[in-house]
Image (cartoon, rainbow, N blue to C red; front, side, top):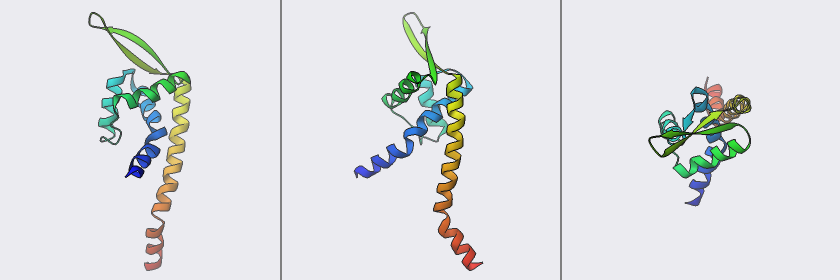
Length: 122
């Protein structure tokens, strides 16, 4: 059923960026940490494959929403930490407003029949 994948991608697409930015408000994080924290805090609703995480990170970096820095871990291994920039904070605040607005409208539509039924029966 190809449509399941379509719905999955459409629902999660833009929200992933906002969730990553929300996590970066707390502290700078590296990719694996973002991935695991995202899965944990969303009850695995956003359990991304590693490759699916880096697309949004690169896009947000190219738009100036986040920056990155390399830190040496161990003798020769580097870890890339991501940091939310002021532009990213503004993007996140506006995104949260929009999500709340859109989801309240969606819930209104989905509950419409229930409300009509309650009004009719009450």
